Length: 315
Image (cartoon, rainbow, N blue to C red; front, side):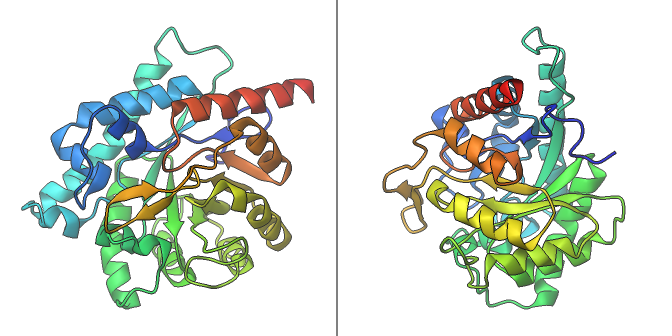
């Protein structure tokens, strides 16, 4: 059975929203280079609590707090390799525990399907903490990218994720490295989602259609799409992706604000004017994994689920 099944009867999986956003709303300070991964060390119970609240809000998938977790990042905090890998594994444990809490709670309604845990694999640029995930064009080679990603992939898969989220990818080359590494685990499945500079191109410059074709070449990719882009860009990006692949599409944008790497804050006006209407359009455009990224909340996910469930019931 595909890791995308079961989901809603309509075939949609509702993803969660911004993990770091919700952690900050609950008082966590995330200004250092590890971002939300720091709480794997300092306050793991809060991560579990946020995962559980996203499930309660309607998410079918919890994305682990491993996006910015890396051996190098933890080493800078004085942790050795064994301790760093243990913390990455903890990100999976916390999401699985949150799933158990939700599943056995009286708040779970009968129609809900067993949620999935997606292991977040952020790009190399995320570990640099300088906004590189929105630019790409790293100064390291393929061998160094492989060495950076391999231990994270291994520990996430060994820790029991249902699939991987190869997310916020700014470049074809890095996504290609990740997909090549994934072949070491033939049974593993992943979605791949990219960041984009505009409505037609990846952050590093290639057309989004090339990303769709790259993903389609892998039998282990279950969906391809975009994340952490402005909502206003999603419709055209999905159209271009649909023209280039038959894979299910993924859409989980941010709020429309821009990340200021120097100030480590989001700036500008948000763009989530109508999560319900957006979700309906994206579903019609072929998106089958729909949620939110930075600056979205459980309320965003609640609106998305309600809209898609109502559309299915009326359709």
